[in-house]
Image (cartoon, rainbow, N blue to C red; front, side, top):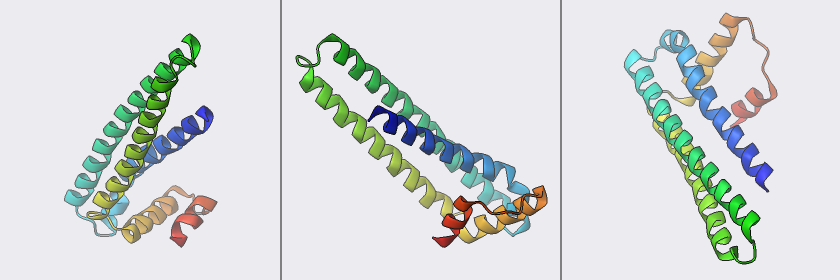
Length: 143
């Protein structure tokens, strides 16, 4: 169970860092397809704020997991109620992370549409000589 939680968090973290890095690296391409510098800056600010929130939630999650492990080592039967409560809190933190991710995507789309992002990404890939699409890109473009 713990491995799945950690894997999910790493995946979510990589999504946030990829989004932030890709918009920062694609500023020239985003400008080329007609997105104003103000909209690019607004999107970057939203992503940076979301990344900070995400990091805080990851720290809270680590703290809860450490507390659970401590209680498991001490006496799991005696501490079962507290362990159960901490697992509920871990679930709430994970839910908040997903909500934060979705809210960020919604807020960024006010400034950069999905189509504009995909055009800029394709232009970025062409400029970098990496034209081949990955399986992930194909799946994203289906949606």
